[in-house]
Image 1 (cartoon, rainbow, N blue to C red):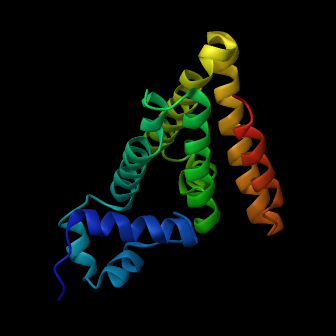
Image 2 (image 1 turned 90 degrees about the vertical axis):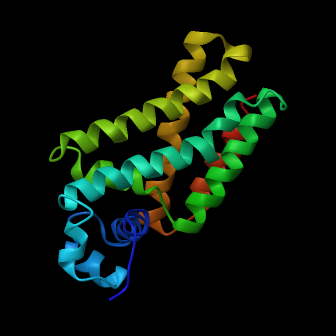
Length: 181
């Protein structure tokens, strides 16, 4: 039997949640894909909700470190920072055909409050980081609203891309956001 660590299991579960959704992914699916027995999963986690919460926290932290941290990089102008963030988002979400946190928020928002709160915190932080970039040009209040609107537009465009199998709305949305500063 293969030895797999907690972070590998979280990565495997995240991909299953992305492909199948939370409700359609079982502990058995995760164990099988990890090459483990189901009981081995329980030596790392209390259950599927625990895996989900850790997956959400891991994804959020990776996004903060790899994408949102750019908002505060003073080596670039606000326009360059916004462009870099949107370029990365477009690449990630285009290749993966969506945002797993957005998908999960729709699927479990009313059933698992801890996860809903963690996902909400992620989206609020994302909007705040975008507002930080925009505040110099637009002022605090308008930048806050614009940051929220950008997140909403991106997530809506991702949903449109998935249900229509048409990438043009997502690409147009990213292009228009890049032009804001």
